Image 1: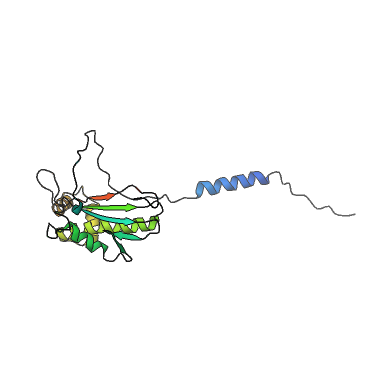
Image 2: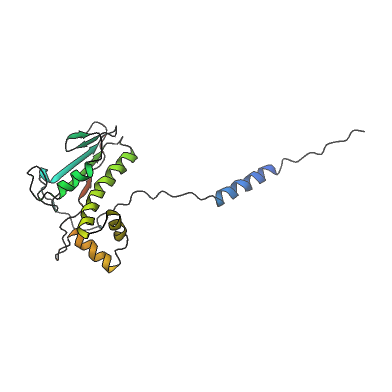
Length: 192
């Protein structure tokens, strides 16, 4: 007499797979992307006034779709000197007739093509912001890193005082050295 082998029912396999999938989905954590941290201007119902910006007060930085860098119309292969160039431009105080009249009027313009990589965009944006942070840190008498830590806690009155002093807050509320970083809308490849 031959012995029969017991059969395993496959009917509950779908239920087990579904429960396993549900368990994995519930227990898995996915890190959320934080994106870029940029401070946007406050929303205002008051129309902004238009004013003329002289060409000498604009420091132009462009990155094309091949991630090639163009600074003030000149190609740059390395970014090592860009931070110092931006600082010299901002703190010119009218000394060089080809550069900004004052830090208050200096604007750093950053423009990219649609094909520019995110990595290159962030790299150049960081350099441009770091130039301003260097200026502020030097005026506050702290390191760049300490400056960034200090700005994380502006609710602290001491930190706020240092922050306002470094940026040159005036009694009328204007700022001597505002971070005027213009990030232009991306252009299609080959357009200005």
